[in-house]
Amino acid sequence: MTVARSAPLVVASNRGPISIVPVEDGDDEIRRGGGGLVSGMQAALAATPDAVWICAALNDRERSLARRALSGRLSAVPEVSDALKGEFDVRMLPIDALTFRQAYNGVANATLWFLLHMLYEAARSPVFDQAWRRSWAGYQRYNRAFAEAIAAEAAQGATVMIQDYHLFLAPRLLRDLRPDVRIGHFTHTPWVPAEYFHMLPGDVARDVLDGVSGADVVGFHCARWRDQFVDCCRSILGRAPAGRMELFPLSTEADELFQRAHRRDVDSSVRQLRDVVGDRKVIGRVDRTELSKNVFRGLLAYRELLRSHAEWRDRVVHIIDNYPSREDLPEYREYTALVSRLAREIDDEFGTDTWTPLLLDISDDYPGSLAALRVCDVVFVNSVRDGMNLVVQEGIVLSERDPVVVLSRDTGAADALGRDALLVNPFDVSETANALYEALTMPDEERIARCRRLRQAAVALPPGPWFQAQLDAVTAR
Image (cartoon, rainbow, N blue to C red; front, side):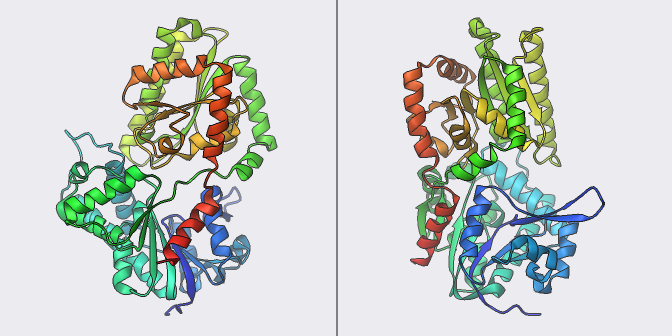
């Protein structure tokens, strides 16, 4: 059945605004996505009659649901319609499991993510062989499926907003199918210098750059990532991209975050942490168990702090909340085990009967993470590379201690917060240890003044206005 071209606004992303999860009684539960970014995009869609969000079915349950729906539109399924509350429609693509696995794990996560965060160990990776080429063919099919679905849904002259590295090829594919529509693409990851991007096979590098360049407006979090993308186009394609390269530096949604962080479950976690920490200072960090987050070197820096400044033993606790991530990739399992071993070594070296120097929790505990941010004196982010990093902004907003920020210079957030944060080279353990010491010993007057300015910057462009600014830029084309 052919879908009528009726949507004046189409959003396309790998993950959509709803998910299907199994519950204890053996049934499935449809949940509406949370978080400020999803909420901001939902608000814009809800304000546009007949808008559609196109996403991929992420598992067999979701593929089954997508096949039940009329032409993939989930409003045809009553329980989904109830979850969406009729504000906009969702079309979930039941892309076959092999293609999804090749596109998502083989290319998006295991190749493009590693490339754009500069995570490769050049002596061993990447390896572009026949097996990888099969994954690349899956990524091409995946992007083509999105482009065809968008082309079928979009009204004449519609606005299409495509999200992130999972869909790098989709703008050009859609442009070829529907030259009448206006296309925006936003990259949430960092970009890399041209010489690093050259690690990709030549045809793949050209396809990625040409694919993104098919958009009328290409968005980035900061000028560094935009400029490096343009340099890659000039070096590899021999031309600058034709569309507008725009900056949309995302910040956090303070009101929604603050309300969630003061519910009963978070208050309970705060009390538990305060019982353990007492009157000690807290260095807090919340991350995924993601290679780019650089938790291992962060722990090395904390160990060096305790070795170099013995006066801080029994006066500080490092709280680390890590969400499990990409456990199907062996590199991530090995890295998580490495972090856990180092944490045990630090506790063995410095811990006493009355002081636990390190609280590491590797679990999906959102209330616990919000509690950690509420009690921290130092917000610590030392990512190898980050497109933005919203957690540092959330920590600034939520901390009840006017925190000092120790922040990697290689995050997009450093562009917005760098004047008042303590910036560090994420590879320099000693510099990071010194920054942690400076943060712990900063005079109150300076700390409070810095934090006041940091809080203003952390809420400058929350998700709703952030997405609307992109819409305005695309519709102005």
